[in-house]
Image (cartoon, rainbow, N blue to C red; front, side, top):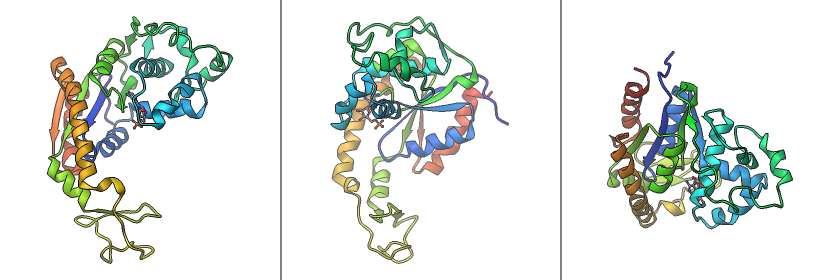
Length: 272
Ligand code: AMP
């Protein structure tokens, strides 16, 4: 049994296609103390439950925009406090629904047609909490989708300091090659790779025998644009964590090459 010595507060940063999801899954299944906290999931949960916050962010999410920093920070803070990982959080946070607990729903219902306390009336309320992050290893988390900007990172550090920021690095050409050899069976979503997971009959689905197609966003042009956008937004974020001394870079051509290095460093940081 591998037990963490201290709380791990981790963020993985990586370009689209480098296998961030794969590494997250592997970390989460190996270290039971780690929880997965996804800002996208928390937001979608609020949209689904028609909370004031959900109603407010629904259109922004639909059009692919970024939800205001203040909103997202309060949502994350609420989530952490619901889990009992913060102390000193104000009760106005009870207007959100949380993936960890739905206790807040009834409190929210009564406030449904009044402005969200603290958000519309006082945009800074709750943002400068004198909260304390728990050092209990069971208060360890892997953040997904947050922070996205240096501003969000800085504000998060006021609430809970991230103590390990991992930058996953795979050469652009390698990811590009992987994407261009990827083919899918449209109706089932089965994915093949002509290099390391080819279909039994070239360009045909193994089960139905139907032809394989390219996914719309698997074109070189689309990927290049996404990669460039990622570079622009992640640079200040990575710089921020580098300055704080918590950034660690890992290089590899595949997920399987990266995972053992990631585990080794994680254990050096949090288990020894
Ligand atoms: P995701 O599931 O991470 O792709 O997030 C889905 C949507 O939620 C994004 O397109 C944004 O509109 C919103 N969102 C998630 N995380 C953040 C964040 N850290 N800052 C701002 N908006 C976010």
